[in-house]
Image (cartoon, rainbow, N blue to C red; front, side, top):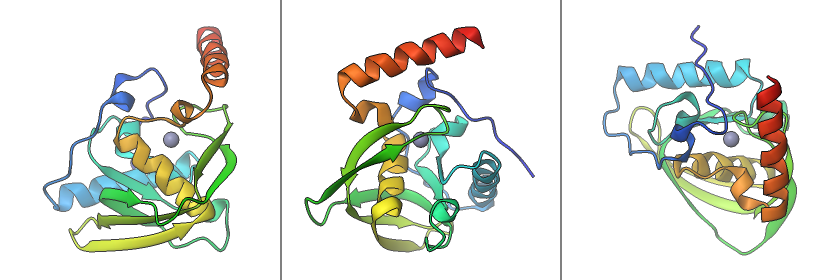
Length: 170
Ligand SMILES: [Zn+2]
């Protein structure tokens, strides 16, 4: 077992667009296993590599803790997302890098994701609802975007103020 350190809001690595993966080797496959272990340990439903300090386009998801009918766990390398229609949904969202803070975020209801798996085999996903939301959240991480960037400036200011206070108080 290897539990990786999860980087928190304020850590610069969360804000850097991540680089594409080019080598589909054992090192990548081992890292993906460590990401899954770290995600389960933290009781999250998704984790992106920048959240453990690795600025690469890698994310793992398993939403079954929140949706028992959810799909099997998936590791996505170099994913890209497209939106088949304009339907959106507002729902509460959190992030392992901003523990203790949830906000309502508007997201596309349906997405299509193109990626490759850790062996370099292309894969395509179509998702809706919570799984689509989680995919958008994790792929945002790979572009240095956090869910707090998708809430109103007023709510963001309030959240950041509370976050800083909580950090100071330890
Ligand atoms: Zn997150």
